[in-house]
Image (cartoon, rainbow, N blue to C red; front, side, top):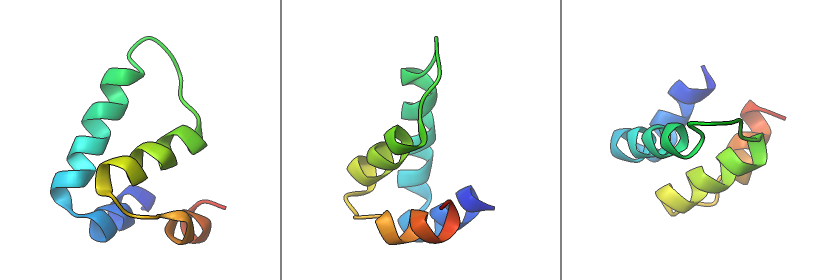
Length: 57
């Protein structure tokens, strides 16, 4: 549900770019939630603290 809500927040193009970039950059390992949030903010150009506070923390 969080990814669906994120899609509504940042739009299709940015969500799909985020997921593709995340998967490619973590191909051989794991990532952390803060790393995912930072990448989402970088790709979308938005401050997403409020969104992730509501949906994850």
